[in-house]
Length: 171
Image (cartoon, rainbow, N blue to C red; front, side, top):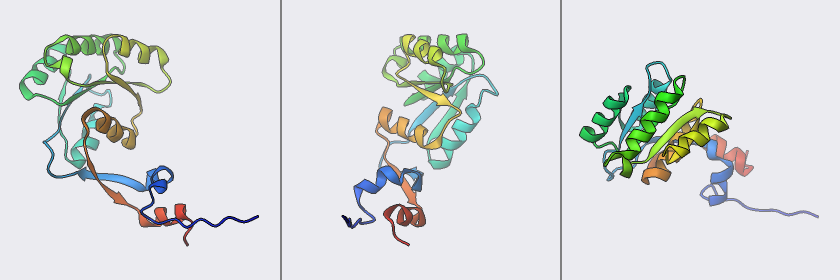
């Protein structure tokens, strides 16, 4: 018994298997300038998130104390907030709660960054108001997927043609 299936490089079925072959290289033109606020203590890893986002065209700012986060959120009108719960979970949870209880923060998606596998922190972040949770260390494709889900950001992708051909079974 033999089945032959012809796949085109544009085939939608490839996107699931070749997900690693697609890399975000920018934000599609014609959209607003997306602003992302990264909240967390210095050294909690927020620098890597900001550099990932800056590299493809997001505008980012960092704020640490809760009052500074609220001030930057109001003045800068961030479209999304990532809160690094990190090494100081109480401050992270307090930041999430205060952001979500503010007028602007109540309308702004808040994503908590917690250690992968830390179910208690995940549940607590959602309980205090986070709209979603991401595991750390961060994985670039997940960051972009989360922002697409929260804001509808459309991206420009670089496709590694060698990887796509190998998934499609071409030499």
